[in-house]
Image (cartoon, rainbow, N blue to C red; front, top):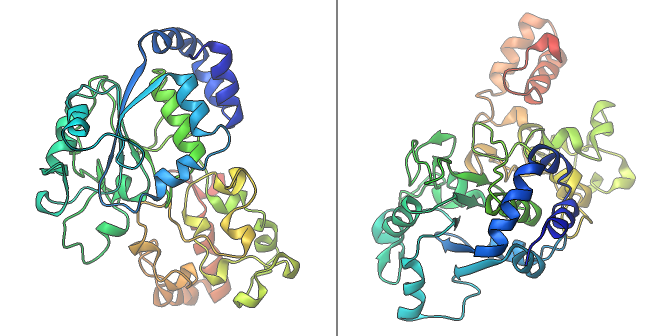
Length: 352
């Protein structure tokens, strides 16, 4: 059973000091309600590889068992972990859930079914009667991800977005009974801390502030590049030219090897994975931008530097070349492009 002390410990374990300061009084009131009534949660899986479920189950700060027990969550439906099957499993979908979680993208009716029902119809029906919030977990559920990449024959989309365009399976104007849009937690997979803290907040009625892409600002307010342990090498112009130089002993930034950290919002470089042990760049792998709404199409080809990928910011080497002529030096133009990549939306150049 959850109480104020347990929740403070739970949220503190995932670095939620800012969240607690903003919503402390609301949490105290909501904790009593959650503890008395329990929280009904349905977890649907569309077009996915179950990676976000695996990520959640491997969470350690806290682990999923502690989170469920302390938050008094009643998971009525989850295809991966539930014991029920057949009619018994489908009967669980007849309730009005407090929280509806979507993992995986939603295709047209004939391409995915749950208990012989098109998942698109079922998802819309459940979303319409969800009391608190719909939470989209992972790149596929949020913005379409790999199933919605170019060549999208199943017409897949995320819950309320298709890539960067609002709409998706539920439509741009969707709101839950509590008046909330879909809460998006991108990533391939989504980070377990992001999932657990957001679900905790939603369950307790204290919804984090969202950005224009439906993401909690608590986790997505800065570029990965700015928090990266290799950022100092970038500032000094120490850029790896081959994958032979990705070990930290070479003291090189992975920018020229296709790192998408400068165009991707997430706190994973600070939070890290596997219990706070490591993150892609620290292991010698460039960020592939899996938290970005344009993943994977706009991030591809993955191992080309940003300046060589036309889909990123609508630029290509020809554009850079033209700017370079005006600026009298290609180096000046390239530096300007890189400054633009790390500038937050709406930020003026003179403010940087």
